[in-house]
Image 1 (cartoon, rainbow, N blue to C red):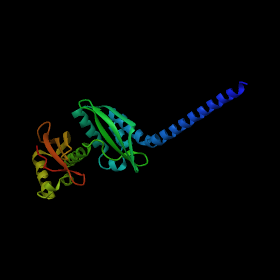
Image 2: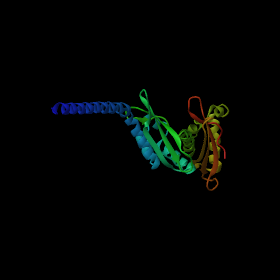
Image 3: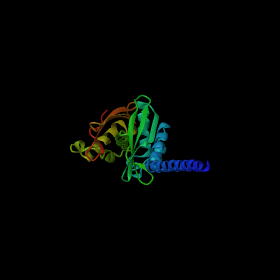
Image 4: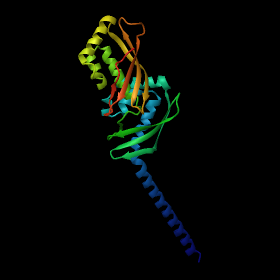
Length: 251
């Protein structure tokens, strides 16, 4: 007479287990739908953070930047920009990324990572990602672009390529100074003080609200003062987003 209640108990327990399994399966499916699509972008963010906190700037550049972004700055200039930031604000001590901070948008994604340099409070940086392998498509550090222009100008001076150097000037300069005149001025300086043997950006201050940057460069000439001259290079971001030199570099 006790068998029917036992079967009822077993049937009830089986139903409970089936219900639990169903709920668990639904939860797994929901989690998969939520997190599987963000695994790629999250992986890029984790790799970015790992390279950044270990100062592996060349690896970061080659492994995580898109082809289009790499065309805008050389690996050497990117590494130099990050090293200057380390010198001015301290190294990046921590960098955290989470799949919870990924936003998918069409064929791209945005990932918010929290970075903290030794001498500054933590800041939230948004990584713009795209492509099948989720590469970074925009500079995470806005100071990199103006640094690249200023250092490229420096490189042109060091190779006496004054036509290329002139190409970094904004219309506010080129409207008043022809390329031929500028090349002539630099040529005269070469004759009197010797050619530029070294030029490196040593300081950068970015004014994001006004889209300007103030940099200092150490420019060394063959017959110039020991240690070189401290030269100011001011830049501004135009309507197209490109950075240009807005005042003639002067010591």
